Length: 222
Image (tube, rainbow, N blue to C red):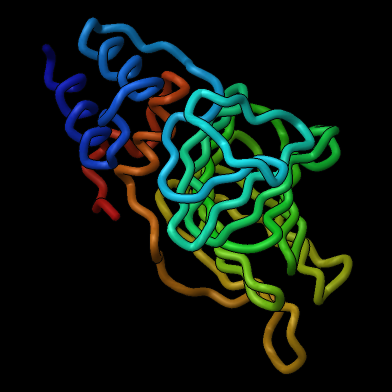
C-alpha cells in the first residue's frame, strides 16, 4: 500500500468513517484494494439523524428537497452528486428542490461542505452566499453566522446591507468572517479559523475522488 493510500486510511479511521459495517465497510475494502468509488448518500451516522423528520440509516440517499436534521448527539457524513458534507449536532439543513436557484439553506447549526465545480447559491440566516467549486464551514445562529471559505471563491451578500456584495478568494482558510444581522454590529467582521480541520476536508474531498488544493503543499494544518 503506498504512502498516500495509507495516510487516507489513517485519516478516515481517525474520523470513524471506516469502522463498522455497511457503507463504511465498503469504503474500507475499496480503498484497501486501491479503488476510489464515489458512493452517494449517508456514509456515517452518529446519534440521532433524521431526513424529512424520519430516522435516517446509513446508505440512504439525500435528495433535492430533503431536510437533514441532527439531534444533540447527532452527526452525519453524506454525499450528494459531487458534493460532500459533515453535518454536526443540533443542525438543520434544507436542500433546495431547484439546486440552480438555492442549493441549500442552513437553518441552524454547523456544517462543513466541499463542492463540485459550478456555481451554487447557499442561504444562511444573515446572508446569501454564491460559491464556485469550493469548500466552506458554516455555523449559523439567527443573528450571527460564522463563515470560513476554506478555499475557492465566494460572493457574500449580507442581509443587513442589501446591495452590498463582498468577494472572497482564499487558498487555505485565509479570510474567515462573522456575518451579522444585528443592530449595532457590522454586517461582516474578520475572525479566526475555528471548529473544522484540514483532515476533515481531505476526507470529504476524497469521498468524491478529489484532493483539496492545499494537499501536499506543506501549509500549516488546521
